[in-house]
Image 1 (cartoon, one colour):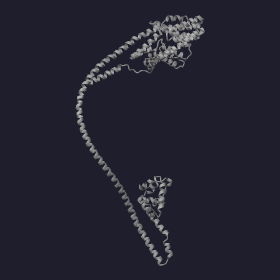
Image 2: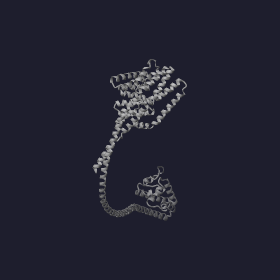
Image 3: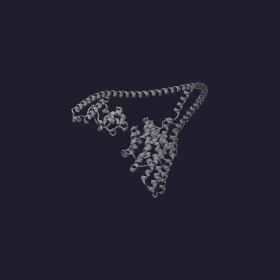
Image 4: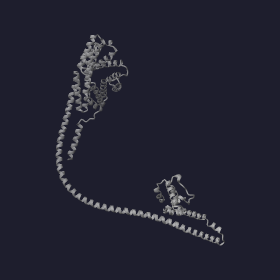
Length: 558
């Protein structure tokens, strides 16, 4: 089966390589789009011809009639050979009747163009010889040289003898040189004539430069662009750049199609290049379209040119179709064989699949049992995890309680020791006071007794008690003042008079830090009223940068 698959892949690769799938240039795509609009451009051409015919019918003078007839010749000269010749003859007859030498020479030059384009070179030469160059006005000298170049080039193209070819092409180049000399330098026509001269001298790069300069000019018509692009295509072919040649022929063919040019179009030459690249369908389409154009133009010499390549392209197209048909037949046979192999393999695989289904059923049952066991283990793990969480929570609470007990024990130890020392001092002072009072009473010194019992002594004792409290508290909480002030803005911070004392506000929250949260107990200790204590607490909380509800919690964290 693997062998058949490999053969199938190889066959598909060959088929895809033989199919016409070459990348299309953007110019060829635009050409195809333009050819689809051929009827639109044809109608535009017919409308212009209809307008010029109306001008002929409406002409009141011979001069106006001549100009209208010449305009019709200009419409037909690259569109329909017979009509172009007919209108050129009418122009000649009318100019002869008018005895107008300039218009007569102009009509003869028109006939030279038609006859040379139709392959009647001898007749064209006779018409050209009937024109006396010396009497030509400057306005017709360009046309005279252009028709001379066209005639001698056409004669060179049809000459099969090298000697005659060289003779005719030399004459054509001489007229081309004269044409360049009478043309304004660096005009569009000057670049056109120089480009043609370079082409005949095989200077293709210089020719391309001239034609590019010409196409950049704003006064270049579409018909002139078509001729310039065709010349550039031949230059690219001479430089072995076939891709650019195809693009140039395609652009020329677009301009020919849009101007309804039927004389000889770039489609003919483009079909040969496309055929060479293997795109037989498109080559056939282009060459048939070109044949239709020259048939409409009705010049036999042009038909002969296209008839030479048409059988070759059609034969190539037929061979390509036959080649594809042979491959399709081979592919059909291969696919039939492959289908048989697939059917045999299908039944074999189906038999194996039944056994696999049974094995899968057994495995699924065992997997379900394992899943149930895993579910029970997961439940047990969940319960263990919950128990661990409870234990961790209990341990955390115990740890917090132990810290609080340790802190309380530390505070208790410090304050018990301090209270023993303070009580001893207080008893000694009280003993001295009793002795002094007894002496005063015995000696009847009552005034001195009143002085001894004055209030200031009590205040001094209270201040001593506060100082003792502050010193003991700051030993327990040495960073209290710093962290307390951190709860306020810089301008609201207050410092105690020394490192071993607290302010009255700090003393309130020092008592709260020790766990004394009852305002009445705080008031009794500090000799304040309860209202004063609450006022202090509210004022301090409002000044703090912390939330009021969070202030006491932050104090407890110090």
